[in-house]
Length: 416
Image 1: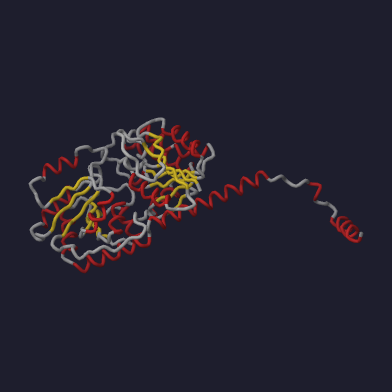
Image 2: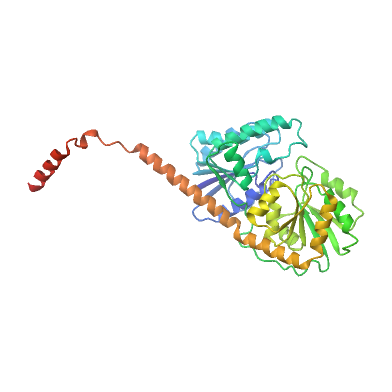
């Protein structure tokens, strides 16, 4: 099976590049799959990741993206074109973003088999911050969603998203699948050093929009005297829309030796970052889909604390994550939940074990296998339909109208 995966791809740092990398990594391991990544062009030259076939054929915020991807698909002739998408995957400006979303529909019109993994729906996004015309964005977001549903089959990662697409848009081919953890074979980490000698309270992400660690810093200040061996670790870089945000926080708290800013974390350093953490905190005001960081915490058996928003509740209940919640925007609530966890080693152990069990059940290897099985069935059905259309109809005269007369003729022929 020839698969073209449309996604931002490392060393690019655009939306969903990490998830795209792990999809590609698992696809590449399959003996019967030939993979080409149709990736985004980068502003500066950088070495491609070894052993991947990457065609950097489209540009972020370019209005020519649909035509660029159509040309690439015609060049590579895939059996399946698989899109890894959020609404801003192709641009953070309205027109390029909208045109990019239309690409899957364009490819389907030209006969390609397409599938879209959609990480959020427009109804779940908080457009009140950083958007000048939120009502207009919602209108065009709804239209873009309709186009996605015309483009082929769609996978979403939360039950509530599937419900929206089925009920609000009357989508037909909408599937629910797991987000997955990035490791193919998770191994339970050594957790004996958690709290010995220090508790490391970790938060990790691309900061500055709906992910802001100030509330966590304030909650940590409340409990710092009570837990003198605790340290707050803020990892990750700026969101593309908020340049300089993390640098401003680092400057503000530069004299506090119990707050550690680690910046961008390379792929091979993520294991050490999570394995040493007592707890992961997700200080979000809204969500853009199920949290990839929460799934990384599961992979390394880390308890999770998150803001009480619908997407996180949905994710925790659906996937059975061990996750405690605090009231959105309430510093005192977050401080209390942190205190309850740090004072209870038994709870830490139970949450760690439960989250690791979740990771074992939904490795990226299993998730990608489910996609490929669905692709194979869709391709087989498509081939059968082509064969049935090409098969000539039997002439009418081969079917005798007079059945008794036909029977007598057959008997006479047999006796001869």
